[in-house]
Image (tube, rainbow, N blue to C red; front, top):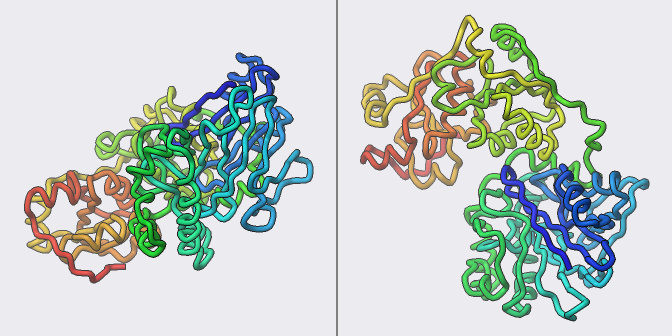
Length: 475
């Protein structure tokens, strides 16, 4: 038997290739859209990819099952549990086979056995891996977004990202039942999850790539409650806000994304800085500057938004970018290829062009913003010389915030910036100073005089400046 692990760091997404070395038949579990790594491995190992296996309809990346099916002839194996056809709406031209609980996918002497594990989604399947040449029990299980290292899949995405009312609590109940069933596996059974640390599909995923049932039974917080209500409260509490692009991923992964051969490649462009500023003014255009926070603050082309690569690019592209707009990136030339790969993985086929960062020097006008310490900002606040803007999430705001601050979470800032006073400087902060840097880039484009609070709310508290826990929410 052969087993290989693939990991897309930018999306914290894991996929796996398993094969029977005797017959050369291989399957890929939860493939990403960019399938080149699987093709290369199969070619080097002498395998034929005959199966593309889905654990569920993904919300955070474009599934590669249809890409594999079209380019290798692999059959798509997917759940038909939970809802009609598992929620999938495949083209009649694709080779597909629906699976129910305990159905199998055979690769020579290697077997994948489907295990229905609803909770994260109603249709979710995990897959036991059995090496039939030497054993009749599973050595491990591909858990998808069911069980992670140190966490379990969040059950609230259908409600928060897609709007299925009541599905969060129902999903939590299903997850509790699925975990009780899962606990019956032997301690030695390995766990191969679909995500690692940094994924928004859970709230506390570990950075270790694999675990065992025995270890998770002992130390995974979600495995500890023995009563359903306590489990539901634990699981639903503190789940992060899902990125806006999750709804789009749920939509496209029901049917499959546009084949990559039909997606136009973005081109390098050499407009002037002033021409880029003009381009950025179009309503259906978004120009993203991927330079560091510090560099952007010292001078940027009007109309551009700062999403630093690699530090914050993927997460905030998913939370702020618009699938209906044409996107251009300002980046270092050696970054063009990895940036495009990230965007394709998120289904953002609307990337049209790149500009080298050197183009910024040619702009006749550059926008800037200041970064100032919390103590300096606090003195200005006390004199009413600034308006304080908090762009953190609501749960962070509720824990503590600066008195009289305006609360607008960063994902809502573009549509609510008119709530700010355009005649007074804005001191913007988040937890650490990173999200507020993105907010600063957005606000200077609207003519605000902006100060980014250095080190954010963490630094504010460390300097023992005034905070409140009053629950009055601004927005």
